[in-house]
Length: 101
Image 1 (cartoon, one colour):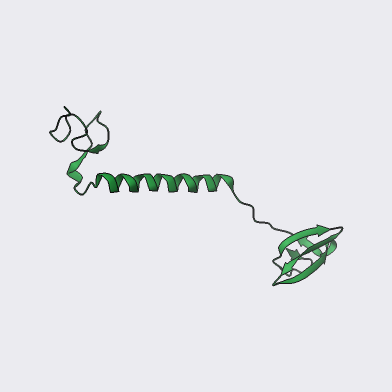
Image 2: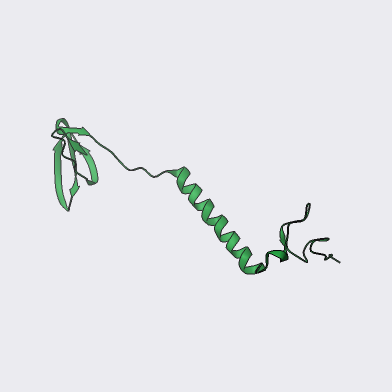
C-alpha cells in the first residue's frame, strides 16, 4: 500500500473496515484512513502458471522414469527409425538390426 505522502507499507492480512484499511505490519496493527491511501497492490496466484508448472513437473518425472527404466547409456541403442516407436533397440522391428518375434 502506498500512502498519500508516498510512503510504502506492506501489510499482512489486510482488510477494510468502514473507511479504514487495517492490517499487520511487522506484527503491529496498522490503521490507515482510506483518504490517506493513494494505491494498493495485491499478489494473486496465477492458475495458468501453476498448471504449467505441474505439467512440467509431470513431464520431467515421466522422462526421468523412462531413463531409469530403459537406461539408454549408449545413444546407438536408441531407435530413431522412421515409423518405429521411440525406444530402446529390440522393442521395434527392423530397428538396430533386430526384429520382434
